[in-house]
Length: 376
Ligand SMILES: Nc1nc2c(ncn2[C@@H]2O[C@H](COP(=O)(O)OP(=O)(O)OP(=O)(O)O)[C@@H](O)[C@H]2O)c(=O)[nH]1
Ligand SMILES: [Mg+2]
Image (cartoon, rainbow, N blue to C red; front, side):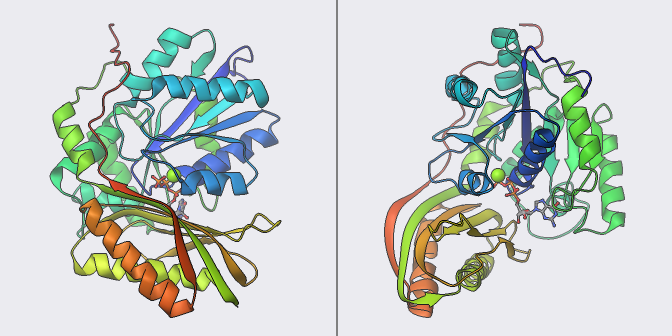
């Protein structure tokens, strides 16, 4: 921490594909910095509103500003406004920002512009790109299994290419042989990029990564070439569904079991249609004074559902947030999810449902506010 410039706030961006473990890492980094006496401000981001990540981080006691309705690069001014807003209240020493998981070209569209325009206020940390080892191994062709089509993989590879730090996450979950194989491949493909290995869940390897974030410099000697047509098409192959649904029941029910069953049913339906899930995440907030949530995640049609947080008691209702991103038509995702909600939650658990907010779409073509190259 000795290199930390106390006159300027540090801007840390934790990128990586959908479901890689960014939010889990953001929460860990937040706690790591708080323990060291630094003030932090968190910024979450999505193409739409009703965000699981914001709900999850707030439930853990963090102050979070949310930029909804577009990615950081396209809403650069909102990013600066969010930072200003946090500066008025929390006065952070460190901003931790999580960009949308289907976004790339963040160095040219966010890091450089921040440094050029607001260099008197921010120091920019190296850009981390977090990877899920199983997803990454499939995309690099090291292992078999359902993956995405080539244009989605283009976006994935561009994320890796621009990273200052590639962070192989979830090492508690995969065999060491896979970690080594992946690390060797990534070193070969991106020889100038530092490759780290960690588990955001267990905490292994995080100190080394976080120390790099606080003292390291961005590397990026050249600007990455990006074909914005392919990028836009790749991003738009992913369908997005964001829904907020009010649940109520005359009888108390076990929300944890219900959410897991609901997620399993969605997985099985999408799997039958040969659709790959990028990330299905849901929170159920009972709205009681404990602030506890039930949270589930599913990061591939081939993975198991992860109950990340549990409600301690049975509940009589609450607010369910659903964020689903998968390579499929948004309308299909929406119809299938609502139908499953109906059979699995309403009929299966005797819970009534009321839609508060529901939208499904494909992300629009990225049109960055700024795009600055090394030489500009
Ligand atoms: N086993 C294991 N699971 C992890 C680890 N880090 C994250 N996860 C799980 O991976 C899933 C996705 O984690 P998130 O932190 O929400 O991922 P994200 O990158 O923020 O996802 P998006 O915001 O949708 O792009 C959740 O089920 C997490 O519990 C890890 O180190 N080990
Ligand atoms: Mg996240």
